[in-house]
Amino acid sequence: MPRILIDARAVADSHCGGINRVARLWILDQTKNFQSQDCTCVTTGLKASTEVKRFCDENNFNYLHIKVPNKLWTLFCHLNLFSLILSAEKKLKNPIDLFLLPNIAYTGAIYRHYHILVHDLSFLIEPRWFNFRRRLWHKYVKADRRIKNADQIHYVSNQTKSDVIKLLDALDTKCHTFLFDPKIEVRSSMLVVRPAWLPPTATRIALMLGGSDPRKNIKTALKAIAEFNVKNPQNYLTPVILGGKVKFNFGEHNISYVEAPGFISDEELSWLYQNSSVLLYPSWYEGFGLPLHEAHHFNKPIIASTGGALSETAPPNTILCNPAKVSEWISAIQISQLNLN
Image (cartoon, rainbow, N blue to C red):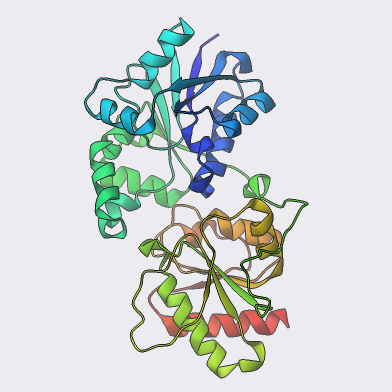
C-alpha cells in the first residue's frame, strides 16, 4: 500500500480556527481509501503536539514528531537545508509515496507527489490585508508556486477555484472540489461556559470575529451596531469581538465594544454562539466562512458580506450585505432583531 505523509501542523495550531477544523476533515477525506496504519502525521517544534497525537489515536494514524525549534526549521527550510519529506523518510526508514499539505507551511523542497488544500488566495488578492511580516512570509514560503506545482489542488468553494485558475494560471484538470458538511465540524461542546471576561451587563450580544484582521472589516459592523443602538436603545446590542485587538481609527465616533483577551476556549465559543443575538461577518473576502455554519447550528441570526465565496457558501437564511455599505448593515440588524423578538 502507498505510504502517506501528512503535514499536521495546521491540526496542531488551534489558533488557525476554521483552517484547523477544515484541515482535519480534508485529511480524513484524502486518506479514506488507504490503510490508516500507512498514514503518518508529522509535526515540528520543541514539543510534540497533544492535539495531533489525539487526532492520530482517534484515526489509527502514525505520529512522527521532528524535534527542531520552529524558528530554526523555518530558517533552514528557507536556505534549502531542511526538507520535511526527507527528514520524515529518514526517521521512518521508508520512502513516501504521497504528501498531503492541508495548509501552506515551510516544508523545504518537496520531492514526492503532493496534494494541497487551498482555503483562499487573499494574500494575492489584496496584500495590504496582511502586515509586512506576513507578506514576507508568503513570499519566502513561495505560496503561489507551492499551490501551482501541486499534483492536485483542492479547494473549498467555486470562488477559490476561480481564483486559483485566474491568478495562478493553474490547470483546470488539477483542481478538485473538496465537498464537506460544515455541520460535522461545528464545535457544539456539551460544556458551555460564560466567559469570565464578559461584562454582566452584556445581555444582548452582537458577535464578530477577526478583530485584528483588516480583511474581516470589523469597522463596518461596529459602525452599524453603534447606529442601531442609538435608534433602538430598548434593544441595545453589545458588540463582542473575538480574534485580536481592533486596530482601526473610528475618528470622532464613540463606539464601545468588548474584546476577548486573546484566543478563547471551545466552551466559551459555544456559549457565545448559543447566547448571541446576531453574528456579524462583514469580511471583504472569504474562501468559505465556517463560523457562519457554526452560528447557524445554534439557530442564530447571521448577517454576512457578499465578499468572496460567502454568497455561495453561506447557510440558509443568511442576510447578505455589501461590505462597504453601513446603511445595509443597519437595516439588516433591524430585520434580524425583529425576527428574533
